[in-house]
Image (cartoon, rainbow, N blue to C red; front, side):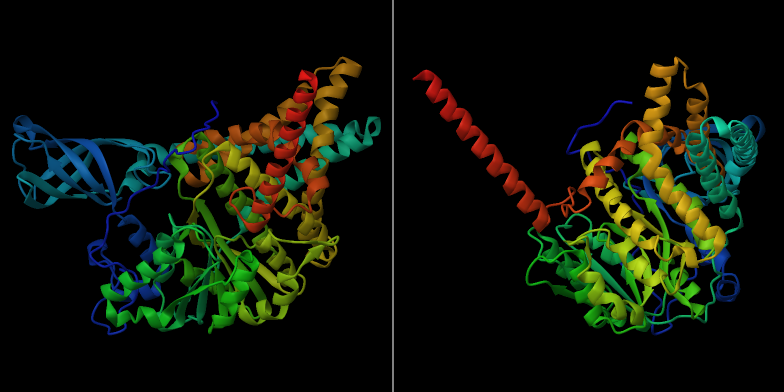
Length: 621
């Protein structure tokens, strides 16, 4: 795959059609307006009794701006006519279609067949497909800029159409392959037991690796999110730390406010960490727009902003927001992440358990279809949450409540805030890895959960340069916090504790194992590492098949690519992280630490240039 070094590559995101209201999902305090979509056949009673069906209906009704050529077949028998048009917006249940100029008219109420292609990126993952002769009905006909426009309702939703045409087949094939791959891996590891006495350390590592990965997939099968209780609505304060995020901050704020949650129980606090761009202007602007859009919602009473007097880092920004929070639960949301309208209602549900200390939601990739790198990350994110974190959630011991969406009991954050903000490791101040660090403080004495139905989408790096810097930062924080967690994880449920320690050993020892199998064995023993490579390929295919089974997305093949890229590139960041864990630079944005590092490099380059110039002058003499 060709590496993309384009710095100005535009992110490709689905474009949702704007509602006439800026905040359509916020319950109307006056009670004059309902959030229930009558077009989807839902009413208030169904919403209260089956919230899962209601959210599925709302998801099906999301409309996306597109430009898709459509072929319409109207009429019956020998009187059929074929007309062409352009779909301008589409949902799983219908579309708005503008007919091409000069095309024959289509009657309102007429039954038609539609053929079109949903391209990757037009709609959320899993909807990309070729549609042939989809039964539909013209429910509305009107003039649009001098052309005939049609409001069309599908007889079957696109989700149902895909399920009948390819969905069942894909599920069956991917499930069968996952089972076969798992069995082959188990058989290969059985061989490791047989040959264990010939190379104890190598075969022990093989057994641990297989046990760790397969157990995660196994326990993820039994994971279930906590069901929504409509009567359980604790007060929530959302804190958004922001530093130089003028591009996305308005969308982030809108997502946090536009929640299907009682307005009087939802507070949003935006803390600007002394940005050097127009972030603060954007923050003020969107708050004013929301206030003007619907004054009944009293936006300025519920949404506040605060500017740090100087840049202090993400932890200090969150701590500043904590002082302004007035509700019992705190939700942290990154400034480039966008909540689904039902994220808050879902993420609070596990707190009905009084022992619950923190919960994280599922993070999807917002810019999946930008390029190959973002597609690779989309697969990695989904498997990391829906499989790996779900397995931890099964034991109420999620080891990292991720930054895009995490929820904590406020009293616990207040209890650990000072130690968290001023955390040091081996004498060095910890300036990143804030989410994993705070999780450790909470997890030591309380439960932490994963709520798969609380969904947030985030912007991921689109260039390999930024991606590698991000991964290096994550590995440093993972190493630091995993060593800290190792001190107390043995107290947790035995299966969870064992899985944690296996998960700690595998990536740390992986570079040595790869060198031994791919370099030492071939050179010293003249043996091709066929078994080792087959094992790597099977692990990669297992990830891809899980993506295909769970999401039915065309991105599944990038699971294989991620595993190959991990072994070839990302794996070798781990040894670097061992010896540079104290570094406090982010690498992906200019924090004060990054500014200092940049100045040091510039000073070294200047001195080097001066020495070179002086040497040249001496040679000339």
